[in-house]
Length: 101
Length: 159
Image (cartoon, rainbow over all chains, first blue to last red; front, top):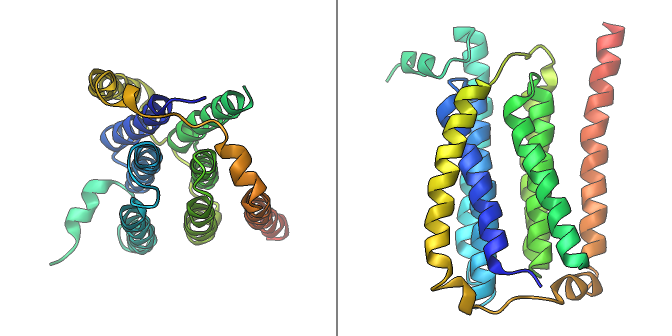
């Protein structure tokens, strides 16, 4: 019998690791992957909490939103990766400031 | 007991995968570690009895996003660098994890302890046939990502 506490703690651990990666790295790709870690932690905690406390399936719209944002983020990652590789030649996050507009 | 063993196994694999995402020198290996982490999250969801959500998690995040990430970015092969400063990362992680776990812990006595806990969710999930479908999907994605690795190695050998 596993308590909800375990799932929330695991979600929090993933979330903290993602946040730490976001803060500790200036590399563009790693920052994006760290945000994906945050999403993974959020999904774990979200499904666990709603499964234990609220009617089953009530979390699906929120989960759908997280998946959508994660998908858009990966697509943006590929787009910016191609741009930075071709035009900038460096993956430092601060180089994105060079974008026009 | 089986449930606890499975949870511990998933947690160990998940923590190792998330550390690998940030510590691997090759972006290709980081992307594969991220795919493993998403599969671990799908395992957690399966443990909670949300079988259909678990399948969606596998299809969307492991099958779609991670494969796209591997094929589009990481398979190029020339990307190898130091990702994160280990000391800086460890310090920030300890502080953030401490704050977040404290925030969860102070609420645990009032909210979480009153909630029911699950026991037969895994058996229920597997008996519905979703566990087998999830396992087949996971194997298919593993074969897909493995194929990319082999093709990449073959191209490197030929060129």
